[in-house]
Length: 498
Image (cartoon, rainbow, N blue to C red):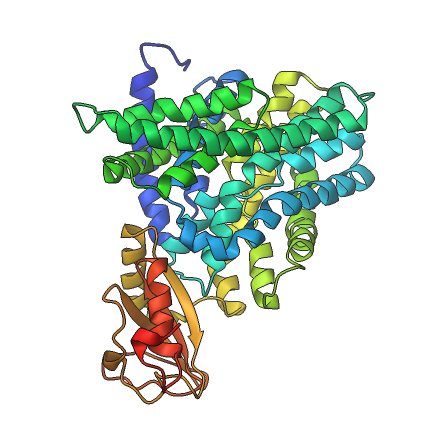
C-alpha cells in the first residue's frame, strides 16, 4: 500500500486508534508506550503486515521537528519553577556537561572498538544518542505507581526536558565536521556557543513578549487562545533558528516562563497543549516505525548491542557521576539518575540529519540509533521500578493504595511535589499527633519510616524522634509552612518561625 491524499486520513486514523488502545494496555502492564507506538508503525510498514510503503527521511524530519516543538513546549508549560529551582544546578549540569561527556565517551568507544567509523562519524553517533526522553521515563514510572523520594523527580524532569537542545547542537556540529573535516576547531566551538547563547536569550525574550501578547489581546472565543500560543510557539522556534540560535532551547525556555506566569485562560491552554503533545508523540513514533526497515536493523544487531551496553553501563554513569561532583547527593540517587538514561524518539529524529546530508555511513548510523533506542527502552525502561526499589529511592510496594491516591493527585496538579523530612529530637512535631500540626489543607503525610518499618499515618498518629516523613503537597510554596509546622524548635511559636 502507498500513502495517498485519498487514504492517508483513513490509514492515519486507524493507526492512531490502535496506538491509543495499545498505549492504554501498556500503561496498565508497565510496557513503555514508545515501544508500542513504534511497534504499530513497524507492523504497518512495508515489511510488516500493513505493507505501507514509506521511505521519506525529509518528511519524517519535518514531522519530528513539528512534534518536538509541541512536546518540548508542553513540557515547559508543565514545569513548576519553584519545584525545579532547588535542583536547577544539577539539571543544568546533567543537560549540558552530562550530554557532552556522554557523546564524547561513547564516540571514543565507537572509534576505537567499532570498525568502519572515522573519528567524526563516531562522535556524531555518540552525539545523536546522548540525550534522554522524559515522556518515556515518566510514563513508565506512573504506570507502575512508582513515586521517587525527595527531589529526584524534578531533577529527572529538568534534565530530560532541557537536554535535547544540547544533543541537537552536538549533532549539527559533528555532522558539519563529517562533511568538512578540514573545518577549523574554533569555528565549531563558536557555532556551539552561538546556538546555546542566542537560543537561551531568545527563549526568554520571546517568552516575555508572548506573555504580554496573550494577556493584552482580547479574543472573542476562549478556544482561540491556544491557537494564538501555537503561532507564538512556532514563531519563537523559527525566528530563533533564523538568527542562528537553538530553536529547541528557545521554545523550552519560553514554555517554562509562560507556565509560571498568570495567563488569560491558562487552564484551557495547558489542557489543549497536553493533548497536542500526546498526539504529536503518537504521530512521531508511528512515523518513525513506518520509516524503519526491520531487516536492516537486524543487520546491525551485534554492533548495536555492543554500543548499547557500553552506553548504559559506562558512558551514561560516568557522565552523570562527573557532572554531579559539585553537588551533595547520596550515591544511590546518583546511581538511579545514571540508570534513567532512557532513549526515545529524539535520537531517531536526529539520525535523519545524516540521511539527508548523504554521508557515507548514514543508513548504518540510523539503524544503529534505532536499535539503541529500542534496546534502552527494553533494558532500562522495564527495570526502572525494580532499580528504584533496589536503590531505596522509591516508596515500598506495601503502600500501593496510598501511592495510587498520591499519583492521581499529582497527575491533576502538575506543580505538586514529594518531600522527605527527618524528624530531630528538638522538633516541635515530636510527641504531637499529625492532626495537631496545623499543616496546610493541600498537604498530607504519605508514609512514615520508623526503625526500618513503614507506617500508614492517620490524624491520630504520633510523630516520634528519628521518624522519616514522606510528605505530599499540591504546591511547593506550601513547603515552607510545612517545615514551620514540623521543624521549628518547641519554644518558638508557629507565627514567629523562620
